[in-house]
Image (cartoon, rainbow, N blue to C red; front, top):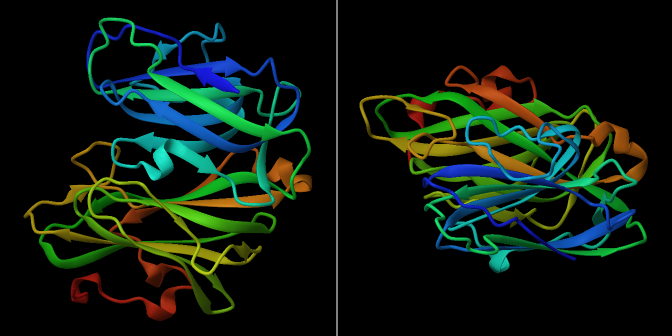
Length: 308
């Protein structure tokens, strides 16, 4: 099924435009893959998701959403992000075997949502700026899809030319899941991102990835999918080099930084009520470090002593 972003004119560059569409053609289906195709002359990035109800704009017409990018209420699942820097398989995202995403007008996720960030004005109808193709089946798989985001707020201290680690550690309190990939992301000061599952004092490396630049890197879990159980701890650290004599703030802007680790997983359908929205865990930098969590305090240390 192919779904386009409606044709619109945009008078200024660097704008966000959102669109939600009711999935009236689909009763209950299980999405196996999504393909996002964007017009690279005009579109910087596209974000795709599904939600229970639009936050506003029930007319299902595109709207300018640069200031408020909240467009879902109730259940919501973010599926994919595609931009000029992040181009795996030309915008194709396949769920692994046994994992799909239940959507349709008789399900919780009855709307598809688009977020489009334009890099140039659209003075003539360039149709379509975005096309999304869904491939699906009508019988359920073993697991349903959702994600969980580890991220940071605050700032990277100044004059950290020998390296600074932003660290995240959060206990898992939801039902068991099977994690199969992590999407990691930093900006210009970031160099690496490492993500771990910690259980009974044992650290299992999920992903270790170079992140220099702005690419959102989608990385399968090392050695194959692993389970995450109640009581486990999910941890991440990102390495930054800040040679400036001023701090670098974490945030959404290009001149700011990020330490994002978006963990993709499947869960049993009987736990759907626990995963209506993607979860998130944020730590403040530089206040938080591995020293501040019982499961990670054994390896904590002074960031100023880290060498590269």
